[in-house]
Length: 217
Image 1 (tube, helix red, strand yellow):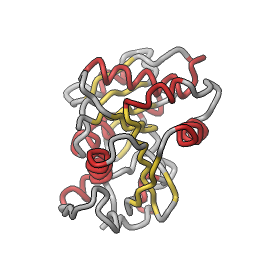
Image 2: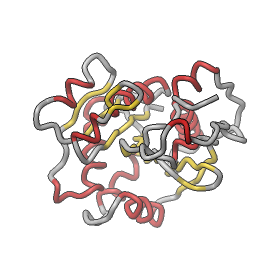
Image 3: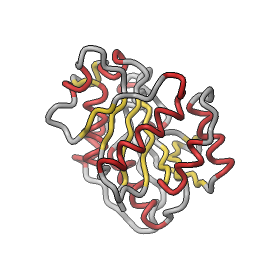
Image 4: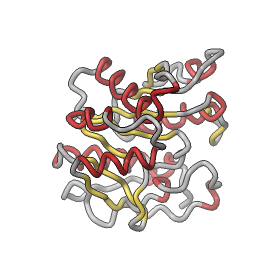
Protein backbone atom coordinates (compact mmCIF):
# COMPACT_ATOMS: atom_id res chain seq x y z
CA UNK A 1 0.00 0.00 0.00
CA UNK A 2 1.23 3.48 -0.85
CA UNK A 3 -0.45 6.14 1.26
CA UNK A 4 0.29 9.82 0.74
CA UNK A 5 -0.12 12.64 3.23
CA UNK A 6 -1.77 15.81 1.97
CA UNK A 7 -1.16 18.62 4.47
CA UNK A 8 -3.45 21.60 3.96
CA UNK A 9 -3.08 25.13 5.27
CA UNK A 10 -5.42 27.95 4.26
CA UNK A 11 -2.80 30.62 4.99
CA UNK A 12 0.95 31.04 4.78
CA UNK A 13 1.01 32.32 8.37
CA UNK A 14 -0.68 29.13 9.57
CA UNK A 15 1.72 26.99 7.58
CA UNK A 16 4.73 28.76 9.09
CA UNK A 17 3.48 29.12 12.67
CA UNK A 18 6.15 28.08 15.16
CA UNK A 19 5.40 24.61 16.52
CA UNK A 20 7.95 23.23 18.95
CA UNK A 21 10.67 25.23 17.23
CA UNK A 22 9.72 24.32 13.67
CA UNK A 23 7.41 25.78 11.04
CA UNK A 24 4.12 23.94 11.40
CA UNK A 25 4.12 22.27 8.00
CA UNK A 26 7.73 21.14 8.38
CA UNK A 27 6.89 19.46 11.67
CA UNK A 28 3.85 17.77 10.11
CA UNK A 29 5.82 16.62 7.08
CA UNK A 30 8.42 15.02 9.35
CA UNK A 31 5.69 13.33 11.43
CA UNK A 32 3.94 12.02 8.33
CA UNK A 33 7.18 10.62 6.96
CA UNK A 34 8.14 8.97 10.26
CA UNK A 35 4.69 7.37 10.35
CA UNK A 36 5.22 5.84 6.91
CA UNK A 37 3.34 8.19 4.59
CA UNK A 38 4.87 8.88 1.19
CA UNK A 39 4.64 10.99 -0.89
CA UNK A 40 3.97 14.01 1.30
CA UNK A 41 2.35 17.03 -0.31
CA UNK A 42 1.94 20.42 1.37
CA UNK A 43 -0.57 22.90 -0.03
CA UNK A 44 -0.58 26.47 1.26
CA UNK A 45 -0.43 29.99 -0.13
CA UNK A 46 3.21 30.97 -0.47
CA UNK A 47 3.55 34.52 -1.77
CA UNK A 48 7.21 34.91 -0.84
CA UNK A 49 8.46 31.32 -1.02
CA UNK A 50 8.79 30.90 2.75
CA UNK A 51 6.61 27.77 2.89
CA UNK A 52 8.60 25.98 0.19
CA UNK A 53 11.82 27.05 1.94
CA UNK A 54 10.57 25.60 5.24
CA UNK A 55 10.18 22.22 3.53
CA UNK A 56 13.70 22.19 2.05
CA UNK A 57 15.56 19.06 3.08
CA UNK A 58 12.38 17.21 4.08
CA UNK A 59 10.58 14.43 2.24
CA UNK A 60 7.71 16.80 1.38
CA UNK A 61 6.95 18.56 -1.87
CA UNK A 62 5.26 21.95 -2.01
CA UNK A 63 2.15 22.27 -4.14
CA UNK A 64 0.45 25.41 -5.38
CA UNK A 65 -3.13 25.45 -4.03
CA UNK A 66 -6.17 25.16 -6.24
CA UNK A 67 -8.10 28.33 -7.07
CA UNK A 68 -9.94 29.71 -4.02
CA UNK A 69 -13.33 29.16 -5.65
CA UNK A 70 -12.65 25.42 -5.62
CA UNK A 71 -13.18 25.51 -1.86
CA UNK A 72 -11.77 23.09 0.71
CA UNK A 73 -12.68 20.05 -1.33
CA UNK A 74 -10.81 21.55 -4.28
CA UNK A 75 -7.66 21.82 -2.18
CA UNK A 76 -8.07 18.20 -1.08
CA UNK A 77 -8.52 17.06 -4.68
CA UNK A 78 -5.52 19.11 -5.79
CA UNK A 79 -3.33 17.52 -3.11
CA UNK A 80 -4.47 14.02 -4.03
CA UNK A 81 -3.77 14.65 -7.70
CA UNK A 82 -0.29 15.97 -6.94
CA UNK A 83 0.39 12.88 -4.82
CA UNK A 84 -0.68 10.62 -7.69
CA UNK A 85 1.52 12.57 -10.09
CA UNK A 86 4.45 12.08 -7.71
CA UNK A 87 3.83 8.34 -7.10
CA UNK A 88 1.50 6.79 -9.65
CA UNK A 89 0.59 3.75 -7.53
CA UNK A 90 -0.63 5.81 -4.55
CA UNK A 91 -3.65 3.93 -3.18
CA UNK A 92 -4.91 6.42 -0.58
CA UNK A 93 -4.29 9.88 0.81
CA UNK A 94 -4.33 11.18 4.35
CA UNK A 95 -6.21 14.49 4.25
CA UNK A 96 -4.57 16.49 7.02
CA UNK A 97 -5.54 20.05 8.03
CA UNK A 98 -2.36 21.73 9.22
CA UNK A 99 -4.00 22.95 12.43
CA UNK A 100 -3.95 19.31 13.66
CA UNK A 101 -0.38 19.68 14.85
CA UNK A 102 -0.32 17.07 17.61
CA UNK A 103 -1.20 13.91 15.65
CA UNK A 104 1.30 11.19 16.50
CA UNK A 105 3.26 9.27 13.85
CA UNK A 106 1.92 6.00 15.26
CA UNK A 107 -1.57 7.14 14.25
CA UNK A 108 -0.32 7.59 10.69
CA UNK A 109 1.18 4.10 10.81
CA UNK A 110 -2.04 2.61 12.19
CA UNK A 111 -4.17 4.20 9.49
CA UNK A 112 -1.82 2.93 6.78
CA UNK A 113 -1.86 -0.57 8.26
CA UNK A 114 -5.67 -0.53 8.54
CA UNK A 115 -5.92 0.57 4.90
CA UNK A 116 -3.89 -2.49 3.94
CA UNK A 117 -6.65 -4.77 5.23
CA UNK A 118 -9.60 -2.53 4.28
CA UNK A 119 -8.66 -0.86 1.02
CA UNK A 120 -12.08 0.44 -0.03
CA UNK A 121 -13.09 2.23 3.16
CA UNK A 122 -12.62 5.80 4.37
CA UNK A 123 -10.84 5.55 7.72
CA UNK A 124 -11.40 8.15 10.44
CA UNK A 125 -9.20 8.22 13.55
CA UNK A 126 -10.96 8.87 16.84
CA UNK A 127 -10.13 9.98 20.37
CA UNK A 128 -12.52 8.44 22.91
CA UNK A 129 -15.09 7.94 20.18
CA UNK A 130 -14.85 11.43 18.67
CA UNK A 131 -13.76 11.26 15.01
CA UNK A 132 -10.93 13.56 13.96
CA UNK A 133 -8.16 14.01 11.42
CA UNK A 134 -6.36 13.06 9.27
CA UNK A 135 -8.89 10.98 7.40
CA UNK A 136 -7.70 8.31 5.00
CA UNK A 137 -9.42 8.49 1.62
CA UNK A 138 -8.83 5.65 -0.86
CA UNK A 139 -7.92 7.03 -4.29
CA UNK A 140 -10.70 4.83 -5.70
CA UNK A 141 -13.17 7.26 -4.12
CA UNK A 142 -11.57 10.47 -5.37
CA UNK A 143 -14.55 11.13 -7.65
CA UNK A 144 -16.79 11.21 -4.57
CA UNK A 145 -14.60 13.99 -3.22
CA UNK A 146 -14.77 15.84 -6.53
CA UNK A 147 -18.58 15.68 -6.31
CA UNK A 148 -18.73 17.57 -3.00
CA UNK A 149 -19.92 21.17 -3.29
CA UNK A 150 -17.07 23.72 -3.18
CA UNK A 151 -18.75 25.79 -0.47
CA UNK A 152 -18.63 22.96 2.08
CA UNK A 153 -16.27 23.40 5.02
CA UNK A 154 -13.95 20.47 5.88
CA UNK A 155 -16.27 18.80 8.45
CA UNK A 156 -19.11 18.99 5.93
CA UNK A 157 -16.85 17.62 3.19
CA UNK A 158 -16.29 14.58 5.40
CA UNK A 159 -20.01 14.28 6.14
CA UNK A 160 -20.79 14.27 2.41
CA UNK A 161 -18.07 11.72 1.74
CA UNK A 162 -19.21 9.26 4.39
CA UNK A 163 -22.78 9.58 3.13
CA UNK A 164 -21.59 8.32 -0.25
CA UNK A 165 -18.69 5.98 0.56
CA UNK A 166 -18.16 3.20 3.13
CA UNK A 167 -16.35 4.51 6.19
CA UNK A 168 -15.05 3.28 9.51
CA UNK A 169 -14.04 5.02 12.72
CA UNK A 170 -10.92 3.64 14.41
CA UNK A 171 -10.12 4.49 18.02
CA UNK A 172 -6.49 5.59 18.17
CA UNK A 173 -6.06 6.76 21.74
CA UNK A 174 -4.36 9.81 20.26
CA UNK A 175 -5.70 13.15 21.53
CA UNK A 176 -3.96 14.89 18.65
CA UNK A 177 -6.61 13.73 16.18
CA UNK A 178 -9.16 16.09 17.76
CA UNK A 179 -7.09 18.64 19.73
CA UNK A 180 -5.62 21.21 17.35
CA UNK A 181 -3.04 23.97 17.55
CA UNK A 182 -5.23 25.95 19.96
CA UNK A 183 -4.38 23.33 22.61
CA UNK A 184 -1.01 23.81 24.29
CA UNK A 185 1.12 20.64 24.40
CA UNK A 186 1.03 20.77 28.21
CA UNK A 187 -2.79 20.68 28.09
CA UNK A 188 -3.07 17.61 25.87
CA UNK A 189 -4.62 14.54 27.46
CA UNK A 190 -2.27 11.60 27.87
CA UNK A 191 -1.55 9.67 24.70
CA UNK A 192 -2.96 6.16 25.21
CA UNK A 193 -2.45 4.36 21.91
CA UNK A 194 -5.12 2.26 20.20
CA UNK A 195 -7.05 -0.08 22.53
CA UNK A 196 -7.29 -2.65 19.73
CA UNK A 197 -4.92 -3.31 16.83
CA UNK A 198 -6.30 -1.14 13.99
CA UNK A 199 -5.23 -3.70 11.38
CA UNK A 200 -6.04 -6.76 13.45
CA UNK A 201 -2.60 -7.48 14.90
CA UNK A 202 -0.44 -6.23 17.71
CA UNK A 203 1.94 -3.34 17.07
CA UNK A 204 4.39 -2.13 19.68
CA UNK A 205 5.03 1.60 19.87
CA UNK A 206 8.46 2.64 21.06
CA UNK A 207 9.02 5.42 23.57
CA UNK A 208 11.04 7.27 20.93
CA UNK A 209 8.01 7.39 18.62
CA UNK A 210 5.81 8.80 21.37
CA UNK A 211 8.46 11.38 22.21
CA UNK A 212 8.70 12.46 18.57
CA UNK A 213 4.93 12.93 18.49
CA UNK A 214 5.38 15.67 21.04
CA UNK A 215 3.01 14.20 23.64
CA UNK A 216 3.72 14.36 27.35
CA UNK A 217 4.60 11.10 29.00
